[in-house]
Image (cartoon, rainbow, N blue to C red; front, side):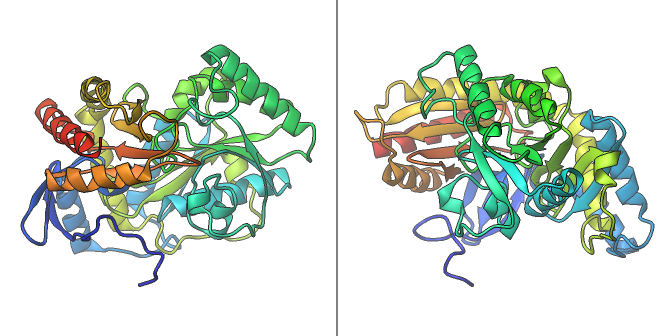
Length: 416
């Protein structure tokens, strides 16, 4: 394996099996999972409805490629198109969020005949050559080479940067003014790509309505809006089914990308776009493994379970309790700068006590201490920030939220 293939923990662990919101390592230790394979196990580990659908589909046929008609793929595409809010939506399936964003960039640059892209500072959109080229987070951008000209916009991080001291209205106005100024100095871009909540960047987000305000400016030049919903989609934020809906005053995005949670661990990604955008390619394009029968069966079962059990509502209720519990604990700890997030997408930013400087040492200490206490969490952050990332399966119970919060509070105390 390559040296750059990162592993968590001083003593890396193998996850051997899971059930519900818990996993077990190969040594038999049990953990409450508050990271879900980087927000991928969205409903629950070993969800019977999903495993049954996968098993039954595998007994029929696993794969035939998109060169043949594929009923599960069509069924899932129809459901996603209906849920997307995009008029006359078309859906193309990929194997990952990286590939989904790569496809969205292909569509936008072809449709607009421009290779200039707007992206947000502190953003992350995947590990392909084009996705790295628009990623605004140095920790995840190994090269400056790119087929795209990328211009970075303010606004994805509310609590840091030149506009941090402004109130929400003034912050939005300043970011819009920055966008207008940027557009006055460049060729017309193809699109703005933005995560409604920045995932790898530490679960940061702008004030609600920022991207709606951006949309008014973008529409003046016909610039497309791509919402990267790889981490925020399917109700994780609780308040909305899609993260973009917090910014939906001026309608849905032109393009939405998704992945991670919809497959509950199976490799599903995809793009939703208006038909004239999706159909703008003038050459053949297929996906050998995007939309395979077995992954589509998993996606259909998982989406059905999520909707029938109102997991978005559960994320709102249980996530709200968890955030308040963590904020109460953090109020007594000098190294916790902020507990932020919505639904079951929660970030805890750590700093050196008495300063506003990132504390990656403390983040590593808390990660290890949480594991020792039986809890798995993630970490992240952008420029000069370090954050813990908390994103349990959306079926998390109140009792499990209380248990995880107690473990995490003890872990935080071990660092400060």
